[in-house]
Image (cartoon, rainbow, N blue to C red; front, side):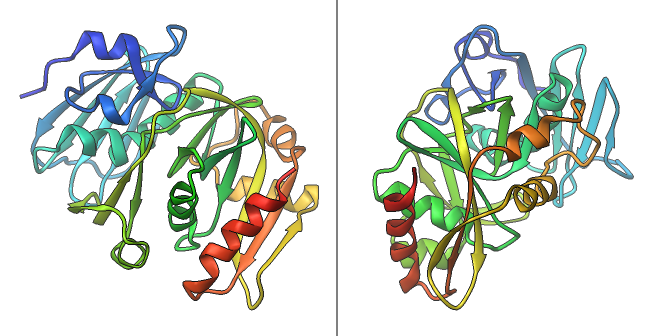
Length: 282
């Protein structure tokens, strides 16, 4: 049976630039929502989804999950209906299940979404991008340990030169959680086991300052990235792989400064890399 919506939460709290309704008990993971943000009602049905493939057009979206579930998103109704083989906790719905929904709804509203984290420095958001298993969430967790506010973990939603805060959580794998000595074990959530670091509150919309691209290498280094390379990196990490509604959006985003943060794979380099990054940002 579908879970009934919680109207009040959808008016006052949200994430990714959306007002979220229908999720009770996860206020600590949400941020204050601007009344102008699009509203999205969430509901959940128990079962296995029979969906042959992901789908997306101008009014509907379908995203399949590895556990046999799926979510159907309706633009006109402002609804996302999850079908999952288990009863998810409210925190699971907010993170990670909300992320692909937010990416699709953002596209419908003329925004751009990237597979990226983000952190705050000198009042502005810096996008943090990496290839799969490139150390993104681990770096965000280390930044959080240093007291740096984290904007988002897995999907960065952008509206021109503004970044929207994601849910107040960074999810780690077992090894980084153990090495850093942080994170609450959630068990299997989505496609993998997760250890969750809950984040402090933050403003819902923040100015975007630039980009940090994480790479593995033999030496620790922070180097500027040319505009053409910034554009290629951003294009590769788009969360919805359809042509942007605004053809010039990636060019404008790539005009912001960008730096490549290179570090060796061993754990001892992580703290040094974060120190170098924080000391070098303009």
